[in-house]
Image (cartoon, one colour):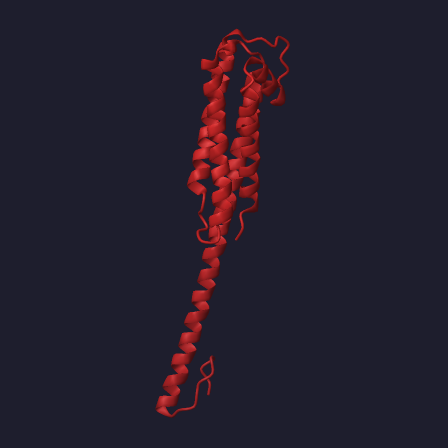
Length: 185
């Protein structure tokens, strides 16, 4: 069973975090643009602490790492779903946890910088991440349940066929006529 929603959400978050990493590489102007993309208009486009490459580079690298994790989950879901229904589940979990931690750190750093309105934007992004994770988890669980139900039906049918074959064989060996399923002859 293909995990269409899981694949789409992993690709979506890959693109979001990769674009944020690319935007942040421009330093203070990139941070202003990234906050604008997230929905927070900034009047003053200068953040004195963000001119330092020691502050901006780790943020860009962290965003890129989260984008790579989501890309890995996307590829894992596409390639290995047929072989293993739980393919990519651990990678997706790590990607969602990493993204949540990163957004929390962005919130803490933004509050320390005095950026007004950042809490609501990060809260919306964290809520979207949580909703995405729940959707991915629900899709994977429903696929496993569907697969297990199908196997149970096959087992039941095979047991019934084996019982019928056994009854037929016994009736032929004993020379008695075969009994019908209701017990009558």
